[in-house]
Length: 137
Image 1 (cartoon, rainbow, N blue to C red):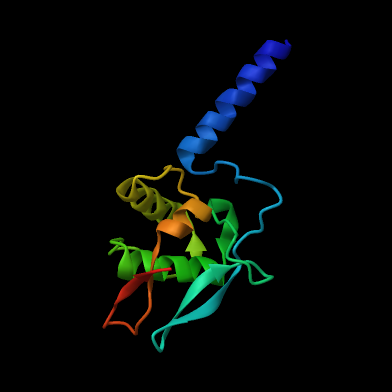
Image 2 (cartoon, helix red, strand yellow; image 1 turned 90 degrees about the horizontal axis):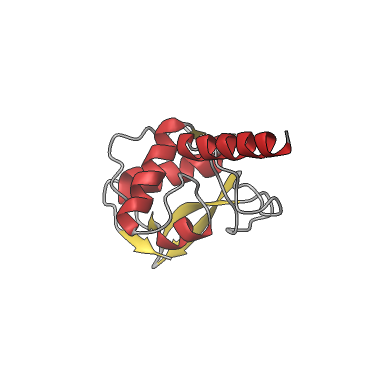
């Protein structure tokens, strides 16, 4: 019986990963729930941060609607090739797929979750739209 339960648990986790509901790296890592303005050369943009202001945060489909997701969507669409992505603040299937596409292009682990590795690879809009200039932070 124990073996059957373990196999079922493994199957559920594998299915969750395929659907973009993979568990985050650690339960102690906060969720990105808001945005924080950063400046580069006199221009500013917003990046996802936790409620305490930390950029060491994660987001995935379980994050739902929040300002951090909106900031991620802006960067994905305007600076990172996700041209058709809506900027609606909801981390749904379309945002998860845009993150997976970005991760694949960057050659990093593909899981659809915005976390430290994805953040390090992300280019952020550091100018005003439509004169987008994306900088790596």
